[in-house]
Length: 229
Ligand SMILES: *[C@@H]1O[C@H](CO)[C@@H](O)[C@H](O)[C@H]1NC(C)=O
Ligand SMILES: *[C@@H]1O[C@H](CO)[C@@H](O)[C@H](O)[C@H]1NC(C)=O
Image (tube, rainbow, N blue to C red):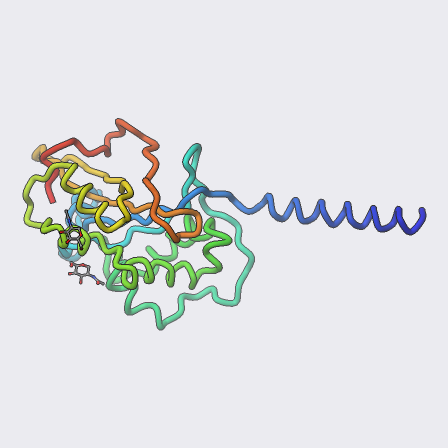
């Protein structure tokens, strides 16, 4: 084999390796930043919350998602030196991302969200600490706090029924007029309550986008009126 053949062979083998490595990275289309209304989350949980919930929307997770087909989960990541959560992040995470079902153990909730969702956020999410830093940036620095967004439109957690339109308009005002995703549930007494709100942004987590409605007519869809919050 001549030198040209050798170069050709090496190039082919190298390209193949790159192809294999890159195809093992899970793909996603957009990021879904989901926040849960604590009292409603407690109502939906099979066992009662150990501590009283706060009347706040706090983080459920940041989920790399696809417009069509299933969302990636439990992706393989290269081992990084930062396998433990930076202690400097914890005070803020405890406020914005509590484990409402068991406040004595926030860390297992964070770990589960990282394992299941955060690991699939490459290359936007660089590593584990960057996943948590990104959520802190969104919720605190960029004021994507849903309680705050709703309160700016005078929608406060007073248990009143609201129209879906009023809730959507209030949120659109803070998301560059992009549509959020709302999740509702029926309580035992038949009252429909707002349980989750997701804000969607592009792949890079930079610009808001309309949240794709993947399951129209799902049992979590919100009705047009009498949504209690
Ligand atoms: C989120 O917004 C609510 C309502 O304005 C506020 O009470 C809460 O302190 C905010 N949380 C953070 C971490 O800013
Ligand atoms: C939209 O936001 C602006 C600026 O924060 C505010 O003045 C206005 O009242 C808001 N409108 C609604 C419907 O929330």
